[in-house]
Amino acid sequence: MVQLDSLRALAVFGVLVHHFLPPELFLNSKLHWGPLGVRFFFVLSGFLITGILLRCRDLVDFAQQDAWFTIRRFYVRRFLRLIPVYYLTIFVTTIIAFQSLSKFSLLWHLTYTSNIYYSWRNWDELTSHFWSLSVEEQFYFIWPLFIIFIPKKRLLTVIFITIFLGPLFRFIMTEAGLNNGVREYIFTISCFDSLGMGALLAFCNYNQDKLKRAKKYLCNFCFWIGIPLFVISHFIHIPNLDNSIIIVWGSTAASMFFVWLIERAARGFSGWIGVILELPALVYLGKISYGIYVYHILVGYTLSKILTYFGLPALGLGWKKFFLSTVATLIVASLSWQFFEKPINALKRNFGYKKEALITTQQ
Image 1: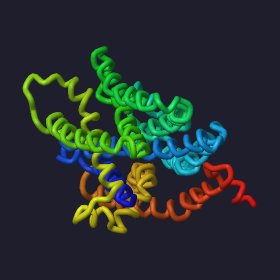
Image 2: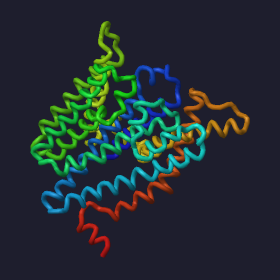
Image 3: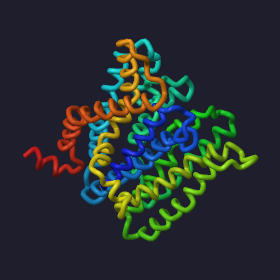
Image 4: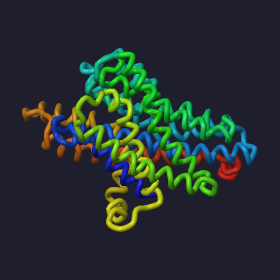
């Protein structure tokens, strides 16, 4: 599904726009490309991870494989892909910008609870993007327990409950006066609609024979309802429209569109869209998108410090910072992928999901 890698690249590009260009720019002030990119990653994670776990469930149900063995393998493989780069970034950030960091926040970052920390403390410029990584890691921790252990006939119900918990939580936060423009979005439960919608698409794919028509209806619904809702909530000013409606349903509407987009890209767009989404350069950027996301703020900060050290003006938000920081980030992420992430990722071959595959490898 190479086109999904290209969508990753476009999503992480929006994050770079969000952090390196002025907030009054249309891409930030109206389109909100950066937050949308994060929501896209949540939907994609729900789709890919649930698909993996449903196949793992088959090993437990039909191959009589131990459930906890399978779950441990999932955790190990996620660890190898995500945690080394993340901890490396924290380590380097602490060394380079020790005076600029809140020492109290370090424990929260190390334990993947940054989203909880930032729900009641001010944003830290260098580590603010860690909140979304915390959401995903918390999801990876709890979701296997649901997919593996809940009876199959209850899984669809659990997924629907997960989807509705997101807007319900944001509604409760708003009505209780606990929202502050950030808090209502960064708790893991407030992202459940995005993660759950991706999971619903994966469930339909997994049960393709039974739910082929249902998946078609789902994607059509997400396209024809999701897009209008998103346009209305972000671009059209409606007098007397309660802002809480946008808070509650804005992210859900975007996630609905992403369900359609991911399903189409997974099957493969044809025509000129397919040609663009299969450009080798774009696919490669998607492959290293995790490194781009984790490193980009640290790289921009370091670049500004280097310029200041040599007596050059520091980089303010604008096209100059965007260009220089983006190029530097791509170089760092590419080197990281080639010499750090890829070798560690290759270790996953020693932790296959099937026991017999492991035994064969060892022999």
